[in-house]
Image (cartoon, rainbow, N blue to C red; front, side, top):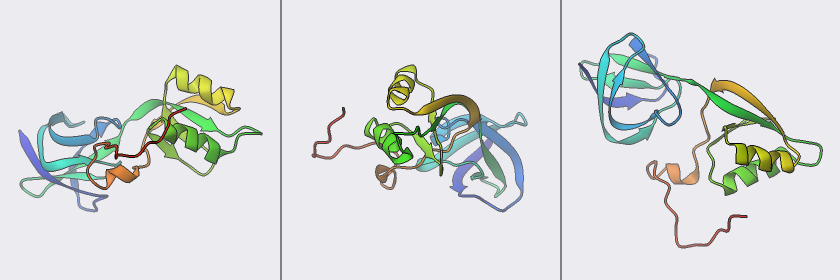
Length: 156
């Protein structure tokens, strides 16, 4: 079994393998993974991290295993005539949904209730399968946990 004890963001060193993980699986601290090549890697990081596509786990001997974002079932959300992208992003953020925000599209994980809400707002919603790299929110800088402070922000 290989042991990973640290990580690098978007490494440039030679990799000895890859591990393909979805968005949720890329949130790691201590976990046993199997690489795409069949090797077992025990990940034991000092703190929880959210790894991105192209990041690397550093093995005890200095070699690396590259992280690949898995293709996931998503919605591609595009603005409608009367509903700009910023308005859609606000509604998704108000519901604390993970979202990958592009110039003219927002990718989110599939949820029928959210799809219905978005279509009701006038958005175009299309089912796609793609890698998912959501934007990290303000709370991400202090660890990955989502912490609410003592202020009120209503959910409509």
